[in-house]
Image (tube, rainbow, N blue to C red; front, side):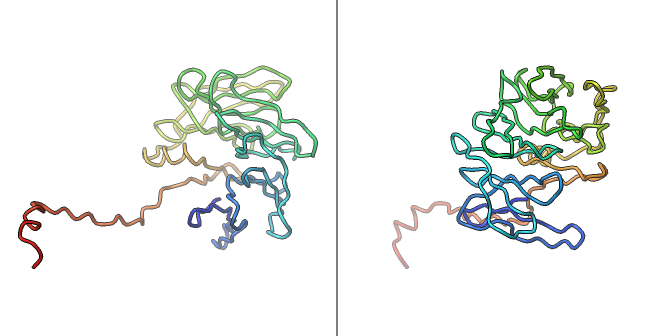
Length: 252
């Protein structure tokens, strides 16, 4: 997760069993959008203007994994075999970049619109993403390059797709809430049936998820969902009527 610190943003790691957070990155860099390596030993994240990687235990110094042209590259997923990262660049363009040095990023996702929230399928052969190429955001699945096949998954709008780690289901967010659809990963990708509402979500949370994403537990049974803080206190507003009369009377 990421957490603000004044004008700075840092990455934090929370022990879910103990409920204890610890700071993972530190000022002055802007650090955000962390993704875990498949073996959970490293974390890749955006460290403006680069993509960096650091040991998950917090030890050692961060290493620059990739310098992104334009200075914007938000990691979204790490491939199951550990060889590639997906990241979102400027103008809604998604790239798949090799983790090993010297490799060249390959553009994936939509060619006719803005893409986002790209993630690898559990078997590493497909990529899911959202795109507005049809005029509204929908969920798509694409075979890994150099293949060109793609499949539309959502019906009537969808965003922020995530795979169930067990590989037989996909999730995404619609105006109704969290949706699920059964999928098959065999010789090719296919859906089984139509998307169904898994559980409703408040409109405010849907908007927060669209802005920040969410995650699914390794067993596919729990969701990590963002929620807006409700403890912020607005400063009071004082309205003064007929204020000009006070000016006419002068100070007392």
